[in-house]
Image (cartoon, rainbow, N blue to C red; front, side):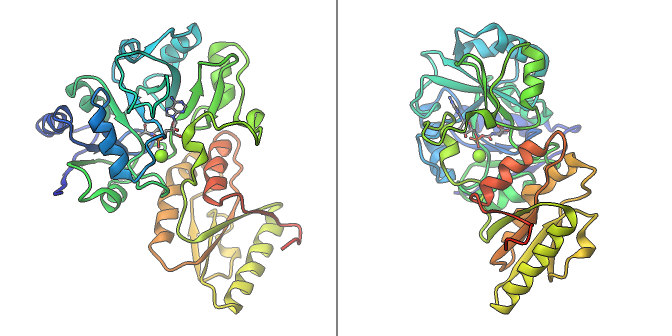
Length: 352
Ligand code: TXA
Ligand code: MG
């Protein structure tokens, strides 16, 4: 398939191209587009065949439901029913923005879009190109993140081209995504509501808006429970090289990582380090990738997937990374890093 690649800026929207993209969606085709979190891979949410095409383009299992993107808050009621007051409050306060709500789905919405579930995940993004496209296409775009299944999400147009060129009809490229991590997902079909995936908004922020208890991801880790967000059961955000997270006090972390890099070198293993700007000079490894200043957690969130993808472009076999447990976004950043590491976390207290 020939993929049309279109570039535009968020504050210089090309109406002609938006119209062309919307026409593709209305005819059942697929268009990747920017959002404030990560790029999305969109199809018409009411067209079951479009959803099937999305699963095929991503190489994603079809029991993993898609998020329905809307541009007008009131459109929520076309795809969701029995919407509780808390959801209305969250929509009022945090939409448009990086929040996805899981609600009971209406009968009209095809099951293909929700991976066979009776619930639907809905998000109203703030990014202007996304909003223009959703409106022009009729109001409802089903979209997962625009990456091949199992790869880190895409936060730059170039990432999307890399993964999706030849697999979909059009790619709308804009500036890099502002947030860089996927939206916070809150399940409002349960009481108390539960955060299924942390993001830019923490469980505390959700709590503040709805003024009631919210289960955070940490409070829900019953290993025997079926995953509530089906996507959580798949290996995610995975770089090609093995990723190991090293936690602990600053001076112990760099010493441990240097020792591990030394060991890797002796075994002829190609190692890389992910660290902050403040510590990069402390490492002796040949390949050092910095995510930015530890004081700027928004920058770390924005750059994380790009760094993982940059390392993917090299022949690195093992990555040792600092843990970025920053005050507000640390929960979301570490959630992604732990998944990318497949649970490989070590403590820097000499236990190498
Ligand atoms: O920021 C985002 O949310 C981005 C942009 C494009 O909007 N989208 C995104 O979609 O991250 P995706 O498909 O990569 O992740 C959606 C997650 C999956 O883990 C999926 O299982 C979960 O949402 N999900 C979707 N519908 C659900 C539902 N009805 N119940 C529970 N989880 C659901
Ligand atoms: Mg995804």
